[in-house]
Length: 102
Image 1: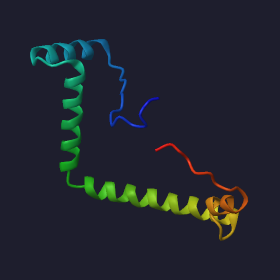
Image 2: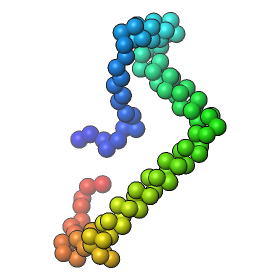
Image 3: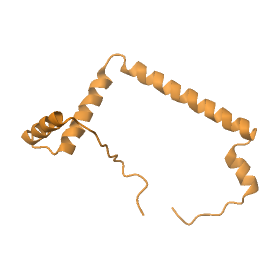
Image 4: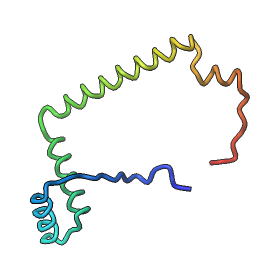
């Protein structure tokens, strides 16, 4: 059985042949695997974006939008089930069994 999450995601990217060749050469000259060089590039990109003056404001705006969308979905679910949430409605109709799994 696979673990739920290993904390690592796989990313596949497509590069033009010339850029791939240059990236491969640069990584080799630095003694890095392509995976390590790509990880460093992504880390540097994230750090650079984080340092941009308006980045925090854009992130806050994105978070507000996520929260608005979540509230709208929550309201829609509550409208479907009245004041009960789907879990509380299910609990009334279906007895729950204790699980032996951790």
